[in-house]
Amino acid sequence: MEGVVAVHELHIWAITVGMVLLACYVTITPDADADLVLDKGSDGGGEAEMMMGRVCVGLEMERKMMDGDEGMRCAGGDEEGE
Image (cartoon, rainbow, N blue to C red; front, top):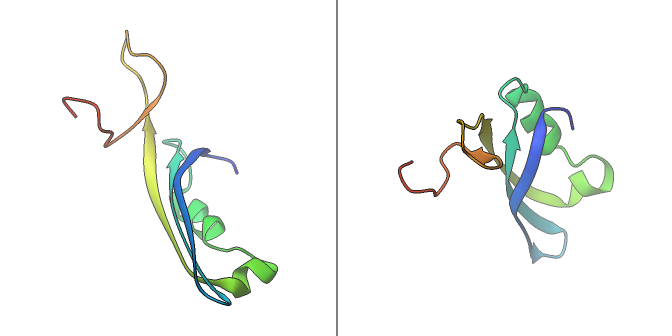
């Protein structure tokens, strides 16, 4: 999906037959449409939508690296000093 960088901490639970819960974090680019990502991410569509009891999607904004940083990190990461 445009604007989505990564999906992590994906958890899926089958509570009962026909009742499934899904939770995850989605890292998006600073220019991504957060409302669109949430709408698309929480809409399973078709049979998947009928089976989902609840979908919880947390958004994280990708941030630019400073000189000397390696790779990409999410805002609110666990690195020291943040």
